[in-house]
Structures are given as C-alpha cells and as structure tokens.
Figure 1 (cartoon, rainbow, N blue to C red):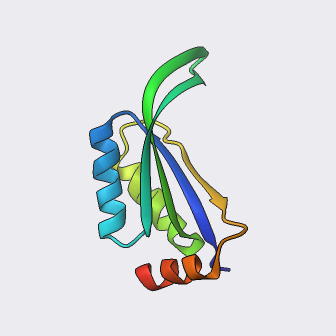
Figure 2: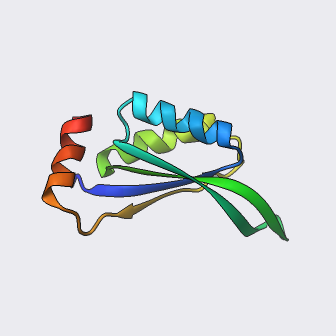
Figure 3: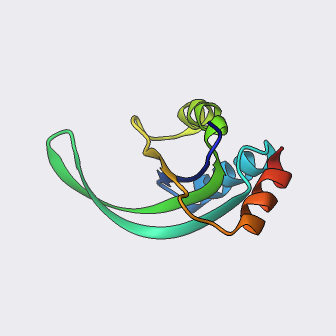
Length: 104
C-alpha cells in the first residue's frame, strides 16, 4: 500500500544536506524537505561519539522509499547512514492531495 511517510536522514555537513535535499526534490522522490542542525550522541564501534550533524526531514510516499534508500547509500558519506521512515498517521486531506499531485 502506498502510504505517506516522514523520512529522516542525518548527515555530517550543511553542504551535504543541501545537496541531498536538492537531489531528492529534483528527482521528485520527496515533496518537501526541512533541514535542522542537531547535536548527536551515539554509539559507534564501541565508543560514545558526539557530533554536530544536520537532520534532513522529508515528506514522501512509501513506494518511493526503496529508491530513496538506494540513492542515499550511493551518495552518503557515512558507512551506515541513518535512513528512517515513519508513517504519517494523520494529515489534512488537502495536504495529502498536494503531496500526491506534486510527485505523481
């Protein structure tokens, strides 16, 4: 089933976040992108790491997710990039219609 989703991808620089966002939008894989600077703490190879990152949040549909994952893995600088999709459970019908009209 083709459902609306919220996509989250963390990335190491603003330039890379901008580049990835532009690519996703130009390829009509997403309808909207927001970029936020974040302070991350995480386990990596047995150590707790601390990093300034950028979080790319995008709105799209579940049928686009496999293509998005494939493209992000090709372009991302991290060994194991965070690529997470969350379902959009509720939304106004007008917003969903705008999403559909934008990328289909």
